[in-house]
Amino acid sequence: MTFAVVSVHSPKPEYRAAVIDSMQRYSRVAREQPGLEWTGVIDDASGRLVGIALWESEDSAVAARPALMAEVGDDPFEMWDERPIDGLRGAVV
Image (cartoon, rainbow, N blue to C red; front, side):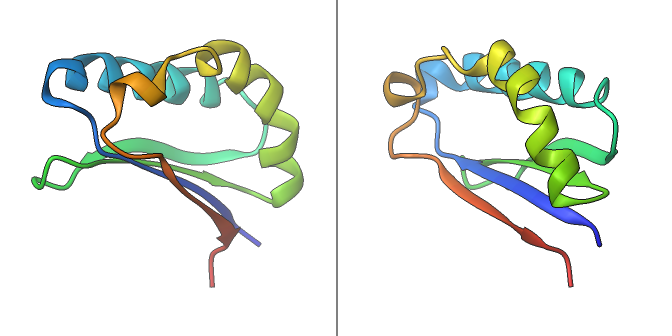
């Protein structure tokens, strides 16, 4: 069962590059983790940035979390984003 981790960011214009950098660092570290199927960042042209990571299983996603948070967990998203990150996690059906 593929498991998805999706994060929707709404960066303030002056912090857009910082949010993209953070999301790309997340993807780089995710690509080093067992069980990753695909990851990337989508610019939906409305100003939002959507980060997607697809994992072989929820267990793979959970196991990768410490390495991912070591990379981006201290990034000041509350300052960079106009609103809280909309995070979605669940099975791909």
